[in-house]
Image (cartoon, rainbow, N blue to C red; front, top):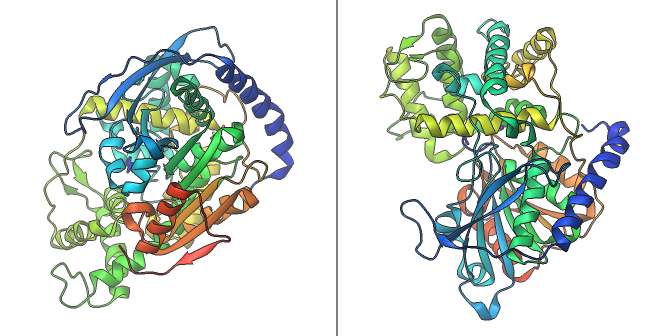
Length: 501
């Protein structure tokens, strides 16, 4: 998960995963490694507010890596060269979250937050994943109502049933089968990792470094597994579970824990004396008020012209809570929404991205979510999980175990999901906030265990999603920057308790 907000292992199955996925990757790796780097036609990047140094190029890659001489697709990527050629080490890939997002423009914005010694050391590389943005794009031409956040995020009905969710899954899956084209079947995390290696080869780099966040940490971990000797310095920021059996199902399920980790921080802030957006007198009262308002909006939604859907119902209210917990800077928006809902009014409708952008992002997102693994197709299985989740985690009302579009996906996975192991060079620094709504600490600890000696992890005593140079603290930021600039990591896992930066 990023923005759309921008979503334990069964070891008995691991041998089958490795026997299929690794040879598949090795064949594609050898092809990329043996090919002479193509001539790249660097041009001025399209867009506004871009650093004038940023330049863009494209390459062609196989749509289906099992058919390397078949149909090709285009990958778009960008570069800002290292600022000190004398100290240049290589290329730092900025691997975006999502799925359903790109980093093509990130060298110009997020990349400029990097300290000077890091910008001196690396070419900053952004890219749009296959299916997204200026790479060969996909669209399913969804109905407008199905572009709502509460359709992609699997909120059940107020009574916990998933009948409507299953109907949405069938409708959206049919739209993708009808309108998505053949590329929809070949969008996956493993293929994104293979695409990254083709970009590496096109740049003429023997190895790459990376700064990956959120879903991008899974892409980075998969790249490390498929191309272990092509990795230099990898930062995995805000990490999800590596469960290769459940994959994105486990990431959705993590929201129930993530919200419980984070809502108390909001509740303390929203009950603080002197806060102009104070919601209640105590943190406990804030929680009770939120649950009471959500239940009332389930029964009596408020009209909300211009929004999608055009009403503030209980699930829209919960989704806006979830979105606000990504960043403490968004706490005031949630508090004001609660205060308005208590009065029976609504704030101005949030501005949505252009329809074409939403269509593209959601199509790419669902393709990744659904192609990486096969999801259950039984409504009864989802309703059982929803009931269990609602009983233990009332703030999320069963959503983390609900039925996504993948419950009716028309395609079977092309290959098993890649299992993350401890075999390979020790090139990874994980950075993880203690209180992260989308990728909670519990999932990061699972990835840390899976990577074994390959990784060191820095746990940051901070709140919010995205730790490095965002919602972390000065200690964590300094540790990551030092690693990128020098290659030196802490000798063991550590905790950063310094004040927020």
